[in-house]
Length: 174
Image (cartoon, rainbow, N blue to C red; front, side):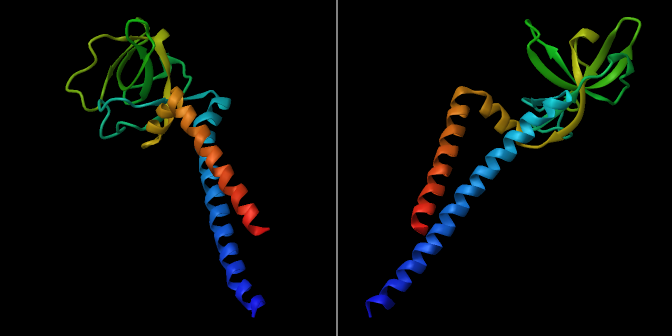
């Protein structure tokens, strides 16, 4: 009779072990996939940038992650989407569509799809970071979060919790 009573308990432990281990592994896999999607393109010279404003909606929504590949600005044509540096220290990335290209002046006229008129200043070739080759909606929110100290800490905490789940699942199997 004692032996029969132990069987359901062992079965419950096994189910809990599978559930916890599966959850831990799924979260670890998601973390790995997101990190690879954000970091791996850099190996091929493709740099991700988060879309922070609605100037390119509906083509590129706020929170999208765009991937820009280095390009010779003289080859850009109207309609191409580019990321360029803007701002006082030229550190702010902006992604807009090329309206015209003036190779003689070595500058582009750009405009956001949601904007009524072209950008007030032309973009010198030297500030062009690249042509957008891909965009992934919402991934920019994650990339932006992970670029901050709090986001990195949260990622470490999630990975630690996932590993703890896997450890607990392993102990339950024993």
